[in-house]
Length: 295
Image (cartoon, rainbow, N blue to C red):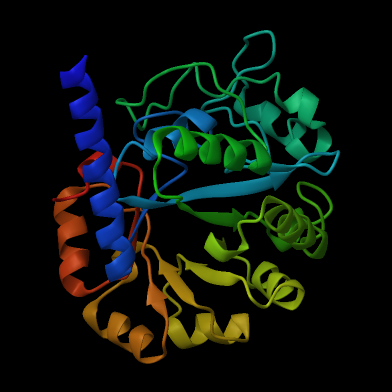
């Protein structure tokens, strides 16, 4: 028993040390959709799994909205045929996705769908388990409880507003309403000082900035239009520029740093690329595999 307690204490001290060092250096390792490579994406088990890795400082996730106005953690605003099953256990079929919108269901209905038992063929190491799409509040409460239980440093939250002009009022609320619901949820949960709102949609970031100018914002980028074009569409300089990692090189990183932006690329899943980006000088890395972070 004494040996087990000593090992538990040692484990806590090691985790606390790593997070303290990262807090001092400012480097931000983010668990993508929790720890998607190891547990069902955007579920409470995935976020709790990410907390097991001392180098992870931020939990990354995506948001949608239910018909009763709940902010739901989900990459897609529908039940994905890739991973989700109907309440009776039947897999959702691809042709059913347009009619399986989260915006057309109450949260009570959404919870009846399982999105963890089937796994994801892209992530064979993912542990299969029953799991449903949680609310943002569910996730934050569960994470805060685990942090208290294990005496862990509190993580940050990087939450993405998944909006597109063609989705407004159909698959998601109008973007202004979506942004307001997210800001209200963040404020209610008291995580304003350790949250980042990210989006590919410049409209969403502009709405959040108008509602809560104190919040940290990140522009997600997956196009080859260039830094000036992307920032020009946004209309202001956010705190973070978050490109797909293959779009980043030394020159673009230098340009972004000169403009005062932090640079956190996504989604980096192999250790050699992580090391290369670290050597390049990025400010953080988003990954599905916290277990592949280099020592």
